[in-house]
Length: 334
Length: 276
Image 1 (tube, rainbow over the protein chains, first blue to last red):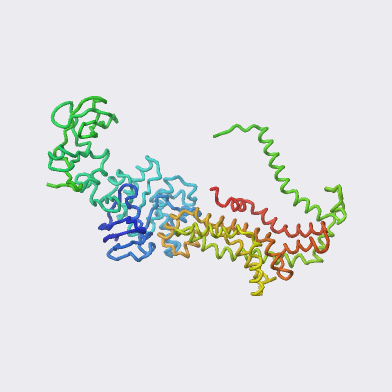
Image 2: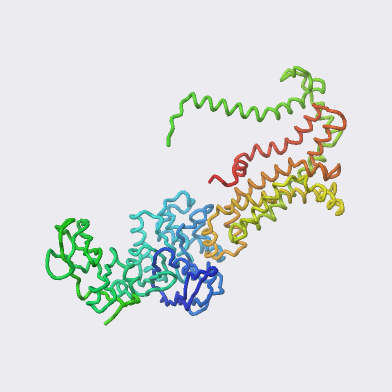
């Protein structure tokens, strides 16, 4: 079991409030991603759950039991660090076995479990090597092996893929997701990469300045962002925001339209503008449009579009896909 | 940037390095050679380099007259004891400063180092009086104590720089893996810190072995280490160059052998963790 509940969790370093009251319910077996810009407190929140930092106030429940005063080792969680944090003087086998050795398991059991974990992660040929003799991807796998072998209540991942190159990152992303589904163990994963968040998560927690802005499934966040911050943070390229008269027409302070929900036409109804830059990727075309009083707008067209910089066009938003926000930045629902 | 280095340049710099090495080594060589001469040949002018009457007479005299082994044993006890005690105190101190520093940690470290900037003779009188009142004059424990205090700042600094290099993540990983503080120390920290501990230990042994100011001033005979043994050949009985050289050779031999076998750790120790 790995049900994790946060109740008004707060963390302050001196006068600086890093986490300003987090409430969260993570169901057993789900994959939850904490995402947000750097300095938003996502890593701190993970470390609070791990027990590597003490909470200033609030309760953290694991399977209904308050663990605020429980040391990290006794919480039954395992963590994968950004830097891998492998023990440099131990072999791969020693690294993976360390947690089991600390738990005092018999040697035969340890060997069996270590070999099973190594087989799952394709590490069997490297068991006797030292971490310095491994590539980045292999080191990452050892770190994951060390986490899974203890059969924890939940995995905590702290930006584990950020040190890998782009191709390996995609591959490891799939492996981590597959492994988590196979083990059906709760996972909390911290990243600043919204593509990782969208692709891996069952549910995403969007954090900003120590506050949880929204908690929901990736598509909920995409389709129904709770506020301007989430609307701007989720989705790439960023959502277009329009204020003033054009927004007032929709009965809102601000309206937001995603680049993929803007239709590009040579003429007709909508927002006229001039193409400043056109990016042709083959699969997509991104146009950056100078739309006068509305500012700069981005539009995405699937496939190739025979337009180039300087062309006059008209952008028309998909009326069903317009997001409306009040003057506090909160989403207006009708 | 790659630079062109010609054979000529390599030859010149190699010759330069040998010359510098020889200049530094020459006094030691001369001392060893002198120790095998007779007193008469020792101050002969022009000096003879290799073609003299080689003799072991000085060594026999020195041992006979002032019991080398008694002083050597004292040196081992004093250097070893002060080093071990300094490490025992410095390890936890450096540990806490490296892994849970406070706002004042840097000040504390600087303050500790600043005590090394004062000439020891400045506190000779108060220390002498304190030692006298506590009955520590000419005692091994008194010398161990003063050398331990004197070297403690350096030991703490060195260990601090080594411990700082150990990534905090690894300690946290061990904590997550269920290691208690004790097991974290035994299985993770100590093995990772061994090179640093070894070079600190070696450097401190050498410093304590060579320390002459306090050992000369606070001991006479019973607790006197090799520094006192050497000094006894310099003034009161007139200058006996050959015997003085024999005494000095005997005094530096153990530490020279130790240093020779641990050059690698020593270099690491002397660079103070500045180079990764």
